[in-house]
Image (cartoon, rainbow, N blue to C red; front, side):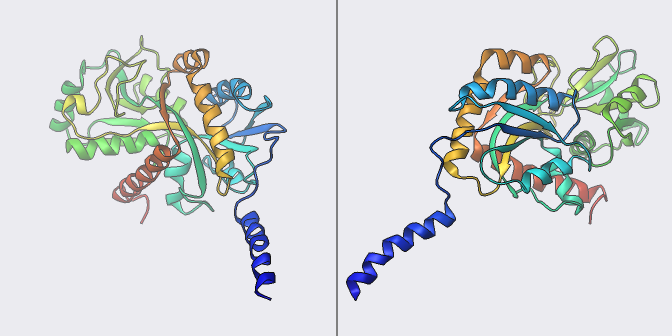
Length: 319
């Protein structure tokens, strides 16, 4: 009897492992891979997704087609919910900025949280800067800082909405520099920029890297590193303010994806990011190449989620 029991145990173990760790198909990938984007066609995130998609197939086994699927709406949450609910088979990914995954879950309107998926790779940083009109009285960040210290709450700035990355970037600056400025929310980055250029507000906090330098002046970069486009613009730390607020883009997959498939995707995406033609195209879109592996990306997401929660509570936007 003991021999029979011992003979059965390995089979049970194999069966159990089959439920907890799906066997990787030897022909993966064998069909199209979809990359979901939480914005409509034509924006910077959509453009970066198509740059990645157009080259990714040649670095994957079997050279599959990689297609971009736009799912805008729900303050960027519709796309992430579609990703979270997709089969973790390696055929559905999402390319996203940090806002849908580290800001939106704080508002209790999502069925997911920051850890409801598997981070695959961090791709780029998005430059974030404080812009003013070219003919404004502030030629430098120091001049602007002196003004806002002497005139509390007088300086207004436009953002794409309360709780947006741009809004939180200014919240970080206000707290770290011990100044008071007033946010004027608009429902898009383009309208925020137009408000500043039209003289309706003093400045605009933006992570849109394509601002017209003939009409605007960048005073400070909120990011942790200087950007390629704004190489001469100091970071907050460069001007003596120990703070930062980064915006970034990466690729995520549904939770439960087989680690071997995740590795295949990560390695192919890393090769794609290292492709000179892809790098040139991303830099032309004003992104900064900033690779992070899955562990680094996961740590960044968690830290960003915690920071955003504190900022949103301080601003009275969440309890």
